[in-house]
Length: 562
Image 1 (tube, rainbow, N blue to C red):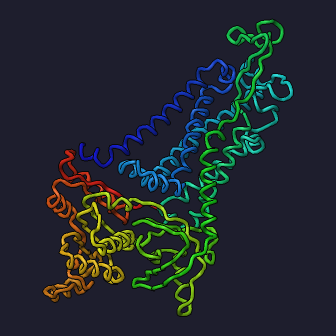
Image 2 (image 1 turned 120 degrees about the vertical axis):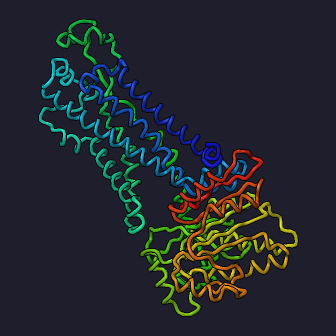
Image 3 (image 1 turned 180 degrees about the vertical axis):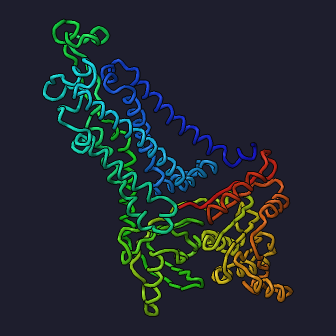
């Protein structure tokens, strides 16, 4: 339990607060509508469905306020990059931004379902009341003569109106339908299988959030949930409840008057909507800034390297950017981790063929004449990630899977530049690097950098600073036989490095045991850029091998999220 607290304690605490606020809002508003005197007559028509409709609405407002904040990337980068007063534990929470975005979306989906079902029942009961299917009180409440079409209780004003007609003609009804349909499309297109295989469908459908928020702000203006208003003389509800035939004829029972509540949703979401609008404006400004190509290289395994320059662009290790190519799509922006170091006068990305957009970009670049500039490119960023904190740990374990090595290329290059200085100032005293690839060709573009680092460390007598292990996971018997024959050679047959390539997957228990043994009193930052399956394994190992005692080894799990 103690080991779990080391890695997840603060995250669990924040989720506890979030869930506590959701529960509080639901319970508070449920009892407000279920027990409030101003809703006695409304509850007579609608029963408990009134409270079941309004309580989820409060939770919806809260989560709709939160859901845009995790995708305000510039705001998050400002918090983690500029306000360094927030500690490492606090900054780690920023790296869970997309997880929290999804969590808020799930809560919105759940509350929308409850809210919608309850209101469908409300409309049905309103309709039955106007038709006179219930008691005398319900009939009297539904047929109140209103002043200026404002003091009625039942929003269905004619017994010729059907619930379906009301849902598609009233302001609250039509906006509710639009909101619900938009949300269904947004959530279903965000499923992993859709997002991975049909990214464009996910991308375009997700922008229905604009329609969703516009409908959300307007929705409450329909004011279909109405409460009793104070009259002069006052309407004595307890006395008049069973005397609808005497309303307006005795002083204790003047005609009751009702009004819809003031729309409040806009007050919850106006701030985040403004921040997100600023975010998009900043993205547009960056899009308009000129980007030039310094170099275009086609690497093995269909990996495209772009070296770019842009006026005023500054980066840190492990950061990522969003790229837009108008020739392919005016609207699509795709994230890529930068492989260059802050010390270089350009920034670079390595792009693997992984979908329609990347395939089209690679094809366009391959067809360019020698020395020509590539297609126009828009760049948004840089944005901070977990890898920015790599130098805040005494010991770092870097794990990259396939093209997931990109943030660590930036880190390795930065280390090389730092060691070119006479007295590099680094808190980090040891780095363990693991790279897992399915094909031998995938090692080629990164092996050159490792060779340079290898010789640099040896010259400085710091060969122990960097320990790296390369794993070929897609090997077969021919690979293994070939490796055995050439095992005694000074360099590896696959990479040309002194460190031999391992065949198969790492034994993570053995690796973590070794790191803990070699660093018995250290804080170890474990960084991953790779698939979710591997993340679950490494996260469990960080918990398993961490010690609650701060004087002993602790492992902190960090993962790249886009």
